[in-house]
Image 1 (cartoon, one colour):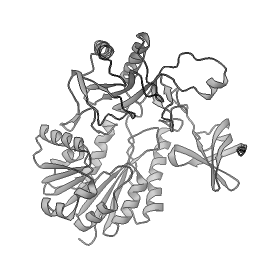
Image 2 (cartoon, helix red, strand yellow):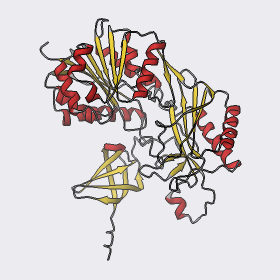
Image 3 (spheres, one colour):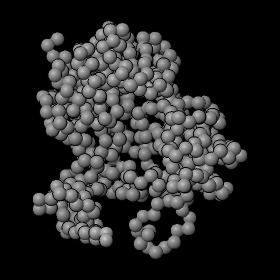
Image 4 (cartoon, one colour):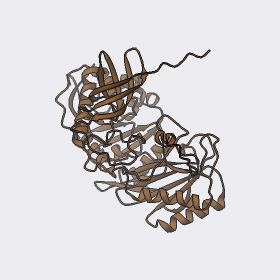
Length: 471
């Protein structure tokens, strides 16, 4: 016989004290810590416990009895349903304070090494319509909210174009308007959705893995160029051509219209053939007169304006005079490498993804940067003592690893190489702090600069400058 699920309590008059990890808020009830999404410090609320562990509990606000004085009205109609912007209800200045504290807490609790006073976080000048890239999913069965299910109303029209519900691969929230990208993105997504509905195109079934309309990626560059990549789950040439022709006629501002036929299980297109329908195969971003080609498979920072500020901090922290050999680890498409190349003698970039290295070489070439070279491969396998002996001892290393941080073998080689300066750019202050503790064997932290790339989320970038001790 199955064990009866224990009924969890509704807690009345809970005061929310602070923000916590993963964009949640935190409260204490007796000796129990409770994590609650979409709360604001100072809220008084009735909280329903959803999950209880020995040392903590998770719950949700059932009723907000007294809103916090700092709470603001969320701009988006999909707030709390779409998990993308979990801090919309918090004033932007307060968000920045929380992100600054997140960086400082990581240095204190994880790194546990001396560090200078943090420079005030660089906030984003644009807090809406700041993303240059969005990806949407089409579904034949949109997700229904609990309120919709409880209403008893029938919803015969279930086709959707929107975002996956967090933690549920087969559930898609239909999006009316997203405020994270220029409104062109909304108009294009809604046009494709309506065209598909009007012309009886099948929307993708995420469980059964079939259907014509699958995903749509939209990139809008700071230069004004626009890329749309339509992904189809079936190879119906006539319907594909008809839709793309309609999109091209309705949106002449699209400078790169491409499509993919993806019949495999997952949505990634990195291993798929890209077909050009109209325009160029790429769009271009611009920084200080440098041009960066961005293709459908390219990685580029999704906040163009803040990317410039982030890279400017990294370049300033490198203190280049023009005579240095710089290693740019995890170079991606070579944006940082190209950005600092005019201030360095030579730049060596290393990246895991071969296609990204192809883009890096193109970007260096179109900008006339002949003092760069790029290598593809797993960082721990490429960056070795032999590699350094062959390509030269670095004066400066710039590292910008993924969220997981650096492999221990990479840290070991950096310590052996002893560059005079290290600039560590991170999208995860926790793993950065762990790596800084390892590097402290030979390095001191000279400066720390947080940068906000993603307003209304808990995510923060951080740049740390390290200097070799006893030079």
